Image 1: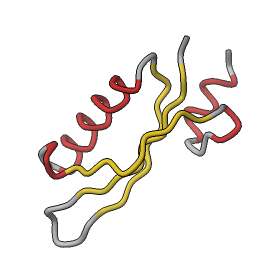
Image 2: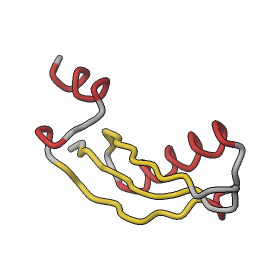
Image 3: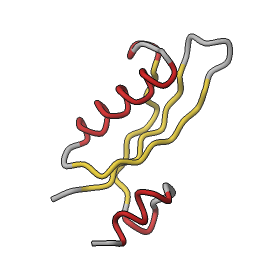
Length: 76
């Protein structure tokens, strides 16, 4: 059964810390973490050691803030 995972964190090691929130529809929390590390690392050219995960939580469909993910799940 798929679940929606919200990851909050920050990128350290740059001039200023960058705060982010990402949401994923995945089977396991580890899948969401791997996808997040991959996306953030490639977009911002940072290593995994410079990405600090603050919170990982499972959320309901009503709590989704990402409009693309929300629209995708409404289709099913």
